[in-house]
Figure 1 (cartoon, helix red, strand yellow):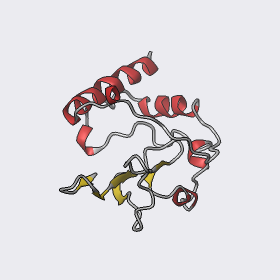
Figure 2 (tube, rainbow, N blue to C red):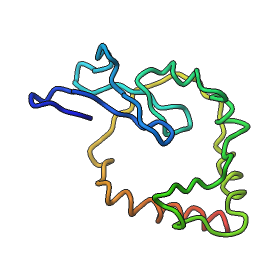
Figure 3 (tube, rainbow, N blue to C red):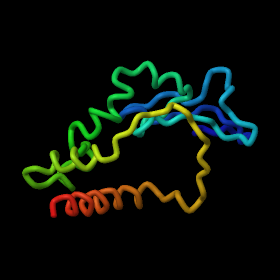
Figure 4 (cartoon, rainbow, N blue to C red):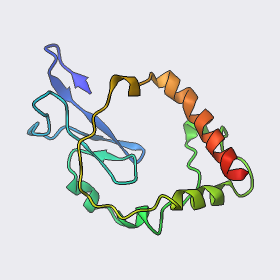
Length: 142
């Protein structure tokens, strides 16, 4: 979020598959009455967009939650390189585990209310991600 001197929203960025997109529509119509920017989350993913229709334009948008669920196994980006990917079959174990969560997206969106206790600092989150992933991957290995 980019906030101006008078507390007005200047711009908004959203994460989109490792990149960033503008999350504020040019006509600012996705700023809600309470002052929050409305964005949508791609079903089963961490990508966001100002328009829900954008997701329908992606190839395999439904298949990534069904027959392609878990493809690629453990995703370990550059920031966490070498911190939690271990074992010979860890990608296969992760794929099998993720496939148990496959679903058919409805593309019906409902608002989600975030409470203050859900937020942590970036440093806390960056420290917690490897801890949680190692614990999950260990449980899959046993």
